[in-house]
Image (cartoon, rainbow, N blue to C red; front, side, top):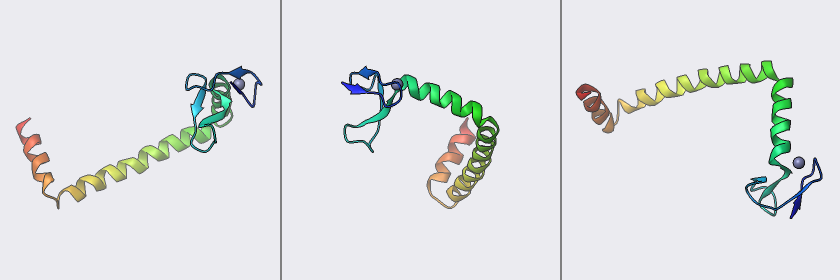
Length: 89
Ligand SMILES: [Zn+2]
């Protein structure tokens, strides 16, 4: 059994009740899943604008990375494979 650090409820130390965490000795987070859910909801509510901005920024960053990835492909052998596949579809 493992006691949640937030609600002080004891649950079996399994993936069903606790999120796996490599940082902890027993391999599970200190806080039970239902408390994490409440916390995340509250966190999102408190940081709505920041989260939205972050998601927007993440999209922009990944767009650039995706473009770069395809540009790198041009110089590689397997880009021919992709082109052939695109041409045939
Ligand atoms: Zn809890």
